[in-house]
Image 1 (cartoon, rainbow, N blue to C red):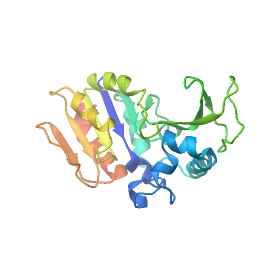
Image 2: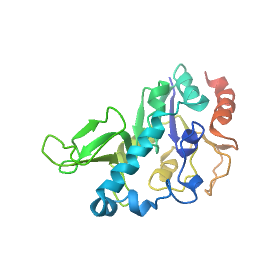
Image 3: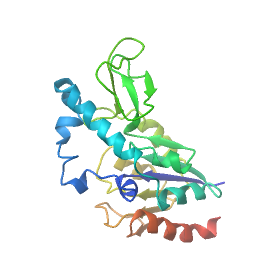
Image 4: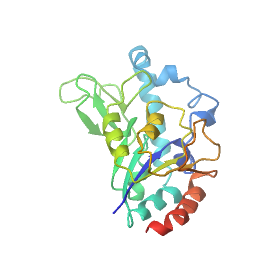
Length: 229
């Protein structure tokens, strides 16, 4: 069975109703990223950061996976599908995808501020001041903030290097280091890019661009790959 590796971004979640940073005019719910998504923001105003992510969890609980998510699940019948996502929501998992790597963390998890390896599920949508880890330190969102290292990047690179087919869906390939994954795909393996707007990258011979939104683009991709089933 061939390995199909997918790099997914905000565009796939947007079709389910989750607002993206770009769609919000450079703001997330009227907040600058510097105020809610950096280590400095956390040190400056924990209440604001906690409330911001509480609201994002509320929103995430109100939406459902879309056709693009389910198409990726369907492809598991024919491929070893490995998803590397820049999204922090859990829509891939809700749809039924079995192998998902979250590069930028997970919205419904928290981590210890004393030991980031201590990670806990958030059962609902609230994470508040006074919620402590087993070491007695405040829990923070399990999110990779701007300016922080991406712990899962090495694993993502290893998965990408094993890809027989590499698919990019719903991401402009503008956010690094995730955008650099395309450079780890073996030169003889095909790359498919699904996005309404062409990303600003150098195209190579075996790269196919599907200029469409995630859901309809995935249907076109399924038809394109039908010969390989």
